Structures are given as C-alpha cells and as structure tokens.
Length: 368
Ligand SMILES: *Cc1c(COP(=O)(O)O)cnc(C)c1O
Image (cartoon, rainbow, N blue to C red):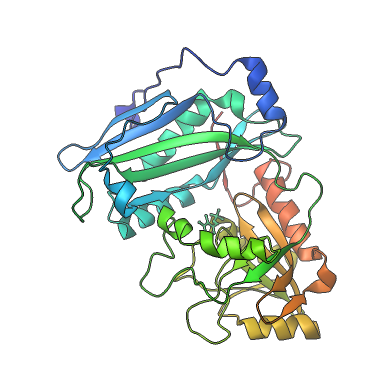
C-alpha cells in the first residue's frame, strides 16, 4: 500500500554511499557509551506557514547548513525527545510506548510556540530511521539499545522575537551501552539551595533545550560537592518540595507501602514515571502523586518511614538514590544500598522492554 492509502506520511530513504564500515560499527557496538556515536542516516522534515510539513525524508547523516541568525541560536526555540529501540532475542526490534513520546513532543511544541508535528509523522520518521539503521541496534544480551533523538528547532534566519516561520524537525540515533555495566549502584543527589529548575507558568513541563542550559550550573555545583546529580526543589521557598532530578523523575517508597511521586505541573511528564505508576500495584505498592517535602524526606530517612528513593528516566530506566547532600545536611536512605522494590521494578521494566516477560499492557511496538 502507498503512504496515501495507509494515511501515513512517507519518509523516502536515500541510502548513504559511505556507511561506517562493518568492522568499525562492530567496534563501536562493543562499547558504545552514550551520545558519541551516530548511525548512518537521519530523518528530516521542514515546516513553513505556507507549505506546512514537507520535504520529509531519510537521508545520509550530515551537518546542517544554518544561517548565523537562525533563531534557535539566539532564542533557544527548540524541543526534543528521547526513546530507545530494543532488540529482542529473536532479532526483532521494538519501541516502548512511542505514542507517549509523540504526544509529549506535541505538548512541548505548543509550549515553545513551534508547529505541531502529527503523531503519525513522529512515529513514521522514527520507524523509518530505525529500519534504515537496524544494523546499529545492539544485540539483546548486553542490554544495550539504540537511543533515538527526535528534535525540532527554529531554523529561520531572523533576529526578531516571534515564533519562527521556518522550522526543522530531525531524528538522529546512536547506540547506547547498558547504563550500569558493573552492577546497579546507588547515586548521591545534591540538594541545590540556590537553583530551581522551573517555576509556575515556566517551561518545566516541556522537554526543551533551554531547561537543560539552565541546569548546567547546578550540575557543576553538584559535581564540585562530590554528587552525581541534582535534586531540584520547587520554588515555594524554605525547605521546599521535591521536584525531579533534571533528567529523571523521583519516587519515594514508604514503610506504609506507598510509592510517592510529585504531581505533574512544573516537572517533566516522564514516560518511565508513568510506567512505574502503572506497575506499582504489581509490587504491592500504592501509587500516590502528591507533594513530598525535603523535611519529610530527611525525617523519613532518619526514622525509617522512607525506605527507598529512586529516579526514573529512559536513559537509565531506574536509578537507586541512596544519599543526599546539601549545604546544611547529609543523609542516607535505606542503609545506603539500593532498595528491593527499586531493583525489582527496574528488572521488570527491562524484562518488558527486552521481551523477556509478557507485555500485558500493550506497550511494545514492533519496527523490524
Ligand atoms: C526526559 C526527561 C525525564 C525523563 O522522562 P522519560 O520519558 O522517562 O525519559 C525527566 N526529566 C526531564 C527534565 C526530562 O527531560
């Protein structure tokens, strides 16, 4: 059937004539790290007010030619997504809830005054790129994956401050190794006293590059203090409520069997967060979305009513958080070792993603 018959946009493929040689690709796949190696192709589409989305294609990965006045370089009108393609033991390749990413991309676009990309465009572009570069999806055993990065930016050459009238959408991809290659270990969060990530009415719920630019100073502060990541509090002042950790959403497990996470609003609506909430019952935990203050966290960690804390995001899936540091206090949670619910939920999500357990929620989406 033609794309018109299926109602799907077409992203016709122009194959590269200079792919990364097979031996070099195998070398990369044996230790891909994250974010430093890219596949042979990219998907792209362009938007203008007159023509809407057009020039859809999958083509050889190549640098852009961008005018120095391109609006994104000055005003950061940009959004992105992050998802993974997983190879199962039988060689098939799958995405995990890609519709969630497509819908979130549309919401981010709305907040950044970028044009809406239809969900079908998002899905087709991601699928076609993964199909073209299927050889780059790591083998099932090692729990590696192909990280897929859709993004959209203001490519109009114009310094006036208004939504751009030339917008570029692209998808690139690169292999990613297992996040914890040497066993799952807990990380320490730096409780930033100086920086917040977002405020009411801001862009905290959008997945936009600007949020990350603003987070780098806090990340450096965390590093200077010997911590792995930042714990952001909300802007209510005083001790504040937990928000998220900047690239991951937060969960607290209590001795009463609650799985608490901050409600949506100024935080990012994480797909992994949503997945964990949906699975809570299977682990005899009651999912609860409500504010959780730093004071409650500190007291709970001390008196044992907070038993586990973990972070959730596509890159690392589930990361145990075993210690907190702030300018005024240091404390640990759960004997400073990863909790049992944390590890069990992590394993279960990975089992679904790699096809090792039945996908009862219909979350997997086959590409190859
Ligand atoms: C992407 C992201 C997350 C995690 O979301 P997932 O959909 O689970 O990957 C959390 N916080 C921020 C700020 C993010 O950008």
